[in-house]
Amino acid sequence: MIGISNSDLLPFSQFQSNVDTWLKNGILPYYPATKITYITVGAEATESPGNVSALVVPTMHNVLTALRKAGLHKKIKVSTTHSLGILSRSFPPSAGAFNSNFAFFLKPLLEFLVENDSPFMIDTYPYYAYRDSPTNVSLEYALFESSTEVIDPNTGLIYTNMFDAQIDALYFALMALHFRTIKIMVTETGWPSKGSPKETAATADNAQTYNTNLIRHVINDTGTPAKPGEEIDVYLFSLFNENRKPGLASERNWGLFYPDQTSIYNLDLTGRGAVDTTTQANATSSNGTWCIASSTASELDLQNALDWACGTGNVDCSAIQPSQPCYLPDALVSHASFAFNSYYQQNGATDVACSFGGTGVKTNKDPMNSSFVCDLHRSNMKTANNVTAPQSTSSAIASGFPVSVLMHCYLLMLLILF
Image (tube, rainbow, N blue to C red; front, side):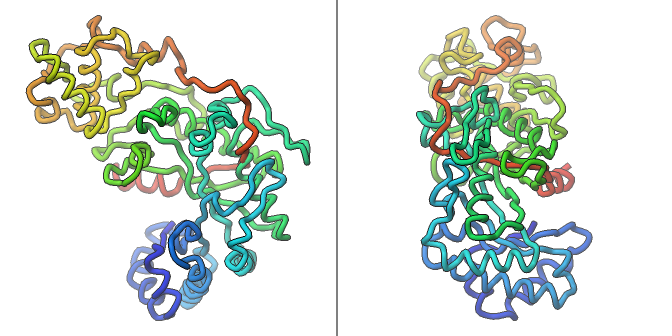
């Protein structure tokens, strides 16, 4: 999947020659050695400032023309991605409706998709619905873990997770405009592994739970309540953390891997294994060494180093918070050792990665056998899943999804990297 940025929409919509040149230089030299199946024109254009969305469909036509000249218009599909903000209503799913402000943009877009058998691409994030409305949306419902049901009062359809509800809201919105044959593709979905102090649901355990359950859900081709058995392609967001992305801490922590290619948490892409909630950095050592807090360091220096590791150092320190599996023993040296070793393992286990201003010490003896350092692996085996959630059942921001999974982007990048 190749994307055209919003900043390129103006020149690409105005001149066919610009698109022809882009295709000639940016696509044709790499095709078919690289399996390119979609070109996305713009990204969530309705969320961008200015009148960018008005440029999307003209650009899509120019891209299609360029592909037709190259004889690839039947092999590479053209579409554009949207956020759920394109809907004005998503609950109950049967009342799903598009925002009337985008009517000028939607009609020609949907006609293009039908004429060219292209999918409607949506970026859907149950995490945000829970974060922004925890009194109306339970964490379990957002994570595919709900034991309660949400019933659509208009259709009687039963929903057990938000993902399905969000997708069905989009289906019903399309049907309300008499577009019943357009397929839906989920181009982004995922869960952050770390967030700001107020983003309590942004943890590695929750990210692992969501993505694992998502994969299981989609590979079974169970579809959604409104579209049982309907297959949907789904792309996980994202492969790597983005440490320079602005905004809340969660914005920088959607990846499956750290920049050094070590995994943030274990993820079974087959959808058949049990959830292993082991945090990799503290369950293993990359070279038989570990990094722990120096017993001679002052409390002030240790605290400063711990704050750095959990902040700028981008270590997921949720496990050493109160009521979490590595909070005990409640000692600064224990918490610092946990954070130090996490950072050390995630950053190549080098001498520099265990400095912490002289408060870190390398050791070749597994500190997990010591009583003063949490063994996250064993703690998680005992707690199984330390996710907590409000008791209320979901009602307000329901949403959903039917499905089969294709993680082409993710798998392709893995092949390139490894």
